Length: 127
Image 1 (cartoon, helix red, strand yellow):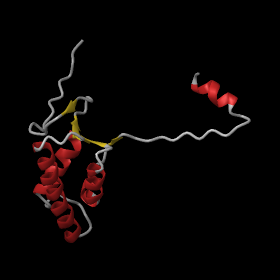
Image 2 (cartoon, rainbow, N blue to C red):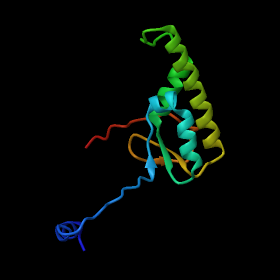
Image 3 (cartoon, rainbow, N blue to C red):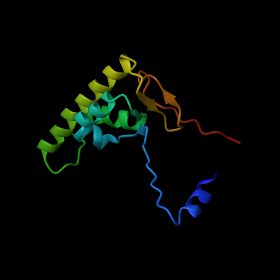
């Protein structure tokens, strides 16, 4: 049966639909502020964490310098830098061990098993 027909037939009885995501795509702030939760999620071995290369590159940049940060305090800039370094170490470790439930993704949607090569060369196709 199609989903629409099931919904139409359910006017007299209640249907409950449960959605269970399998893939989680954390952004840069998740790695800065909630690395411990990402680690817990990864340790369940149920979810697959997909990390965009853009996030990895942002974490790399944040881990290297606080000079260009426009935060309101040096303490916050240091917090971001310190946690970005932790996140990069964590990601490098997981990808080096070839953890099966963590993947990297390019901006074009290609899934990578490694983050050894982190830069993306975007080639504009000429038609």
